[in-house]
Amino acid sequence: MGALTIAITGASGFLGKACVTAALERGHRVRALVRCEDASLPETVDIVICDLADGLPADALLGVDAVIHIAAAMSNDPAILARDTTQATAKLVDAIKHDASHARLVLASSIAVYDAFGTVENGTVDESTPLETDLVKREGYTRAKLVQERQTQDANLSTWALRIGALYDDTRLWNAHIGPRLGSVLFSLSRSGQAPICHVQNAADALVLAAETEPKGAFETLNIVEDTLPTRAEFIAQVHNGLHVKLSWRLLMPLATFTEAIVGARAPGLLRPRVLAARMRPVRYSNELAKRQLGWVPSARFGSATSKTKGRPL
Image (tube, rainbow, N blue to C red):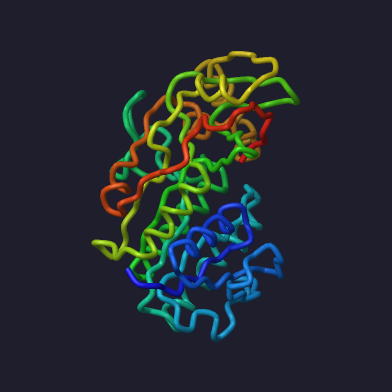
């Protein structure tokens, strides 16, 4: 594979910066699409300042071989998601079709798009697992990721959708699949099942490999999670060093059902049955298809950190 020109949206974010580094290390030219100047980006990067939701400059994708689309709202606010995730994706897709229709599109999607009850307990979530269909019963972020996948699939471009697990590095370890934290107190709701995590370096490597690789079909999906995923109990033992209150997500289900019936979508995530199940139900996750189709070998591994940290939700 020769050097490519790869456009990366959201290039100044947590995953975006890792992706820029991974692309440069593999000898590619990088065009970073960002909302404002970022002095931390390497000098060799071609920077395009734009707000995707407002559209792209006319020459933003000129000469681009692949587009890695990471920019999205990390929110559950419907208005923010509508603008910064779905509208931004629509504008990007239009620009690709108009100015770079030959370019591959690589979407940074999420492992959260699967149906909360799409597989049996302790079964394996892979790319054949059904997607969530009861969208109004899931959090806004998940709904927006599902819309993104439909947008890119309907565009009839050469597209990979990478369903990435909860991102972490040695300084950002916490995620919503473990349980709520109040200060140093953890309320774990499940200790079995795998925590669907992915080191940011592994995710970036997978995105760049997808940019280099022609998908077999017009729209292909891949799960991007660690090779050896910790159980929730193992994750907690590695990360948490405060008070630990053990609860059962199953015991919350009746309360969640009642709360959602009364207040609907205004109920907190863990008091909505499908959100609770999606985050806490014990299942396993497979990344075998990504390794086969991309030749991806996750190099970073959970547990390599030498000290515990309080972390924060990702």
